[in-house]
Image 1 (tube, one colour):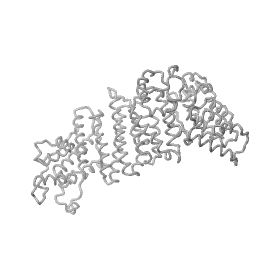
Image 2 (spheres, one colour):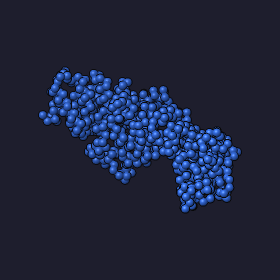
Image 3 (cartoon, one colour):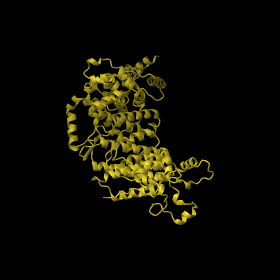
Image 4 (spheres, helix red, strand yellow):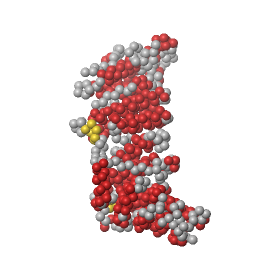
Amino acid sequence: MHIHTLMLSLPLVVEAGTPVYGNDDVERNMVLVEKVAYSKGLSPEAISIMLEFAMSLRMGTILCPRVLKCLIPAAVVPQEAVVRAFVWLGVGKIPVSTQILFIKWVLTVFDMIDAKDQLRAIYGFIFSFVTEENLCPFICHLLYLLTRKESGKQPFLLNLLSLYKVFCPDLVTLSIPSRIKVCTWTVQLMLILPLFNKEAQTEPSSSRKVVPLVQLHSFAQLLENMHRIELPAQMGSLLGSSLALQYLDCVQDESALLRLNFWLGYALHEEFLFCGDGGASQNSEEALQFLNKLLSTQHFLQEGFSSSEAFLYKFLNVWDGSLLRPQILGLLSNIPVIPSSQIRRLLFEPLMQLFFTSSLFFKCGLMECLNNMLLKWLTWHSVYALEDDLDISLNSHTSINMTLSGFKDSVMELVDFVGRLASVGLQLEGCHSLLLSFILDFYETVCDTFLKYGLPLVVIPPTGVFYPALFASDPVSVDRLAYIMYRWGLFISMLQPQAFHISRQTFREFNHYAVVMVNCLWNSKMFQPGMGIQPGEELLLKSNVPQYWMSFDLIHHPAFMSYAVDFHQKCWPGRKDMDLNSIKVRGWYLEYLFSQGYDGLKQFVQSNISRRTYFISSSPRIFLCT
């Protein structure tokens, strides 16, 4: 029998009460229907008949979920079939789990329903299911898609909104919990929905009052129809459309952003939080594409979404640090500024557990993420700060505001947190040069908070970062530390004549670091009193290192010794005995070192030691606290 004829005849010839168990004919026919549905999709007529067969419970409640799961349309979904299914839903014999499955199917194929007028006509009937606790989240989602301006005049909506106004006059927060795994529909329809939306519209756009966004193919068409655009119900299709993103960015339609946020929050929670063992881990390719599109959208709009922010705060508590790591860290770097009173609970506590229990590469990735997060925060401050510096808007599409002092507190909390992670992380990883590089990236951002972003904030790195960088075995790390110290010194010198307050402790820390660097690299006075690192004299003597106080100057430092050897060979090419002590730190060797591209070291030396003192003992520039 032809499959189309089979699907038309099967529900009609089955009598009510026909047993399911042991019925080989029904099982064989269902397998055939599923094969066609998953490979080609079902025709509109087949959808109508199979949906009627399932919701009428002609063979009881057992087959209904199985039929619903294979209702994958090849073209459109007849509106009349959906309306009749809602009538069966009101009979009350269908199990709650199956009712939820049916509504989720309607939500998934909503864009493919050939018309919506009859569904909107039974708006009140659908609304009556709001009282069912298990159905309420999904009914609200469906009402959200069906709601238009005229729907707001319904008496039951007005009464409900009035009651909400009494209970929450300022703010009503809506969340959509779900514990049902995502069914096959989402995976099957993920790629065909945008294509269907473009091809299945039979009515010319010129005769419509509104123009579906998916029908527009150029920016000129977008401008021409800017005020007549209708957004799709499956808002996820916007993530892959540059034209749709241009519309969101130009018009900044609050309702469109609310709809996108609503859909996005729902999708993130469904795919990653409530999917169990059969969710994102098994559909990693789909999850990867989804998150990549979301990241691309956020980069295009130059800001994140509140729904992805709320999702991340929950996901961090169950994340293993490995699943889709680049994408999750990318989303994390886009979150807006968190108030200092909440940042520890929402962000620091879960990240700290992940950091100390994960690999070196995760530590590096998290450091890069936190650096990007700080860059975003400082950029928002520099762009959206008001001229009086009293209030800043953190997001152009929201009304979240924070005082300048509150913003500084959040930034300070973030920098202090990274300092703690960096200090312990370097100990755990043996001062690995790769991790140290990402840490220095962060502190290069920190030292420019005022010079580049106008935020008067001075945060000196902890000793657990400063000394590993100073004694690093690679010259790049030492050079970058010198650059950071130079920028901090420039920052402090610019702030001194102004009214910004810098604590005495900050001055003492910076001066101490400057003295240590100059005495170590320049004056060959390592391990002297006041250097911070003071091992016992007996221990130093037992090391049998001759002239140990010179071990970390620019000649004998492990990071620069290869340059000293090369310089020695160039100066004394015929000399067989190599005596590095014959090289003077100052003079030609210093110029040779600068010529190798170590600009940070050059700037630090020139800002702390004048050229006329190259050949005499020198001291760093000391800043006094006024």
